[in-house]
Image (cartoon, rainbow, N blue to C red; front, side):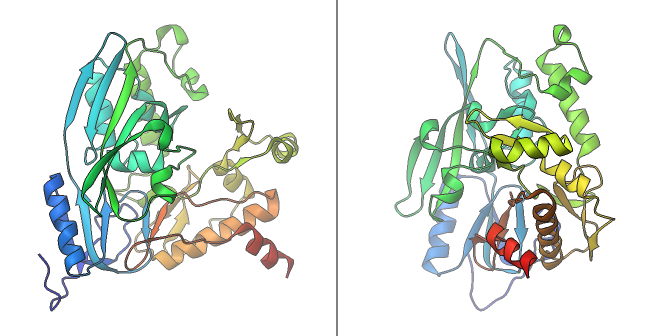
Length: 357
């Protein structure tokens, strides 16, 4: 599988949606669980670093990767039903958007609000993806996880996944030695549309259908978001901040910031609005820039380096904290030379220290 005498140095530029020009020693596309297990066992045997990715759509490579990048292409969809629900078992290498289309074609509704979200099913569970009023946690029943320590698979119930805004137990609490191999999705046979405010601009509630929602959201996302095949990006670089009412209401009153009350009593603030209304004057570091219409997205205009992206992100964080007293937390994963790392661009405390010097 891998001979340590040779350096393969395979380009990852077209295999990460940010288009960062880095390399890996080798890349492997796995289509079966047994192939995945064999690959991981060999990596461990030869003490080779490994990284499992789906679409490479939510990551920033900080440097060349010294090991093997494994791309999950394990596919399969099984549908069962009872009187009230559809149960869909989906392998983790399936593309999320393809699953949305697949269910609609079968007359199974409930995923249409999350149309055109990039990435594969495994990442959907890790990130708790969401859009237009719906999150993965709202339709998830379970997540099947393969632990490489003993090659056993365990089914994690949705209540144990600790889903929160763009996060889960898989992102922060599980160790590195696992892979999501499948998820269970549960959809009611009685369709209850999730009407996000922007949808009202395109259709009347009386005429709403799952197919209309799907088509509207696809149209919005195509118009609003950069196509990574044309402009490198990893989706939203920052999360929309969630803050207390005490912090939010004075800002909302002063700036009329778009905001969304959460069930836990906190307030979600539009991070894109904050960046837009700071009025950055065409700020660009090398080829790293802010997208012109979706300000939470940082883009690679041509040949940006990860250092340029990080420098731009730090400037944005500092400026937003200084003006609005809100800290923007990164949403994407950072990849070091041997694994994912918890890179803190800036902490709120460090930014305040820098500004007070």
